[in-house]
Image 1 (cartoon, rainbow, N blue to C red):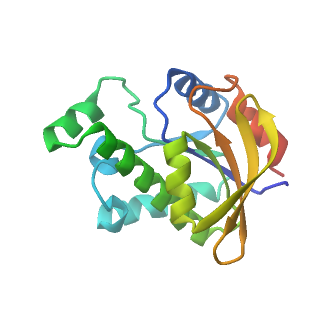
Image 2 (cartoon, helix red, strand yellow; image 1 turned 30 degrees about the vertical axis):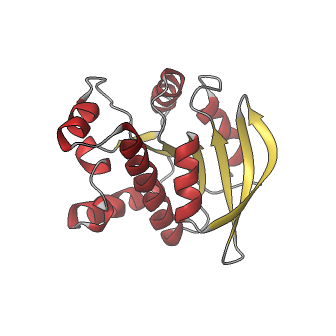
Length: 185
């Protein structure tokens, strides 16, 4: 299927994914990094600051450049880990907060622009997005890159969303750029 816009939701912190994100940014993707104080705050997107950020992201998704929303530490200085430790959030708790944050962003964006397709890195992120979008079944269609699968997400309301799933540790450096050339009209 061809889509109008692809949004990358990157919940993986894998080194390979980091290289893919950096390459895509060099090739014109708009990268939006969520800060640890945002993605580690339960229900951040329900705060006034979170609502403003979602509106900004939705506006960016209406542009021509593909958008990436990332939770990886752009400075690689461990700020997210330090904040989580300070707040007493376990590793499992961090994973859950990131998963839920990106899922909530996907649900908001999908409501604003039903034609959006999502490329999702990381299995936990996929679970969060599926839950937030009311997914009941994921139907793989074809492999569009190493460890990268194009799928239909069948939703509980009967609609279908286009999803690309990618494990954090797989894929070529050019995978996100390749996805846009293969899928975006």
